[in-house]
Length: 523
Image (cartoon, rainbow, N blue to C red; front, side, top):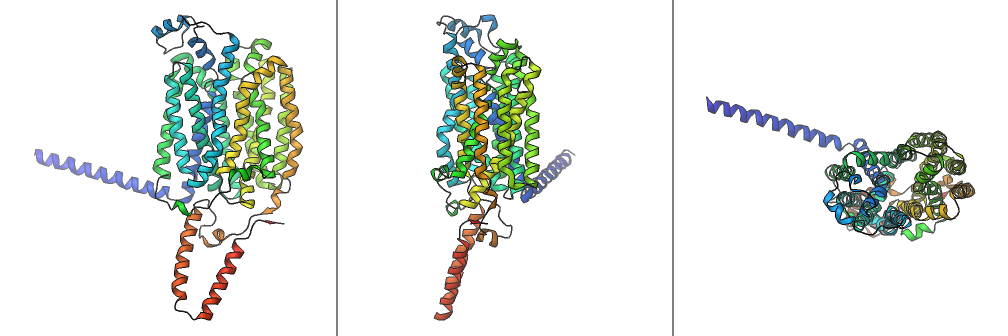
C-alpha cells in the first residue's frame, strides 16, 4: 500500500515536471518570435532607463537632510529613521560646517554622477561599437546594482561620493547601450521614433516620481529602503537581460561592422547641432532642480510637500509632448527640425515666466511648459541622430548615443555646481531669463537640419540579401558569414571553369561589390 502511494506521488511529480518543462519550452519558442523579442528588448531597456533616472533624482529629498545629520547639525531625536543612534553621539563632537560648505558638498555630490558619466562616455561609446549593445547594458546594470547597495549602507560623505560616482559609471554603459539598442532594433523611422518616445516617457517618469518616492520612504522607513528597492529592480532587470537576450551567447563578434570613431561623429556639423540642442534644452531643468526648492521657500513660503511634488505634474505634459511629436513625425517626418525648434522656444518662454510665479499653483504651469518643450526636442532629435548615422556613416549607434549622453551630462554636471553660484551672484530672476534667452537664440540653429530628411541611405547588400530585411547591427554577422560561404563556393566552382568564364564571373562580382559599397545619396 505504501509502495503504491509512493509510486503515485512520483508519477504525479513527474507529470508536473513534464508540464513545467513543456511550458518553459513554449515560452522559449514564443520569445524567439522577432516581434516579441523586440518588445522584450524595449521593456528591458525602458526599465534600465527608469532605474537610472530614479537613482539620479531619488537623493534630492534625502541627501541635504542626511548630510546635515552626518555633520552633527541634527539633534539625536531628529536623526533619520534606521540610523544607529549610538554612532550619532560619536559624530556630534565634530565641528559644524558652515551652510556654504554644506551646500558645496551637496552640489559636488549631486554633480559627481554626471561628471564621471561625461568622462566615461567617449570610452563606453567606443566599447559598445566594438562588442555590441547587450554586454555593455548588462555591465551597466550590474554596476548600478552594486553602487546603489553601497549608497544604501553608506554612513560617511566619502562613501556616498564613491557610490554616486559609480552610478555615473553604470549609467555611461547602460544609458548609451540601451538607447543604441532601441535604435538598432527598430530600424524603420516611424517605429524608431515611437520606441524612443516610450523610452523617453520612462526617463521622465523616473526623474519626476523619484523625489516623492525617496522622500516618503526616507521619512517613514529610513535612508536604506529606497535604495534597496531600486537595487532589487536593477538585479531583476539584469536577470531578464541575461535569460532572454543572452548577452554572452556565442556570436561571431569579430565579423561586426566597424563603427565610426566618436571623434569623427563629434565634428560632423549635423550631429554637433543636435548635440548642442540636447544640452541647451536640458539646462533649465538641470539648473532649476537644485535651486527651485530654496526659492520656493523664501519667495512663497512653500511647504516641504510642495517642494517635493512641484515637478510631478510636469510628467503628464512631458508624455503628451512625446505622443504629439511621435504622431507628427509619422505624418510629417520632414519637419523634425521644426518640432525641436518649437520645443526650444516653448522652453525659453516658460523659463522666463518662472520668476513671476507667486504660489504653488502658478508655478506648475511654466514647469509643465519646460518639460513639454524638452519632450518635443528629445523625441524629435534622438531619432535624427540614428538617421544621420544611417545615411552618412556605418549603422552602429554606440558612439552617436554616447555623444547624446555627453550632451545631457554636460547640463546635469554644471547644474548642481554652477546654478547655485549664479543665483547667489546674480539672482534667481537673472538665472531664468538667461536660460530662456539661450534656448530661444539656439532654436534657429536647427534650421541647419531642414535638409537632413532629403538624405537617402544607400541600398546595401545587407538590405538585399537578408530575408528578414534590415534589422540592426547583428545582421552584419549573418551577412559576413554568408559572404564567406559564397566566396568559398565561388572559389571551388571557379577551379572547374574555363579561364574566360572565370574572368567574367570575377568581373561581375567586382561590379556587384562596387555598387553595394557606394556611399549615401542626396536627392
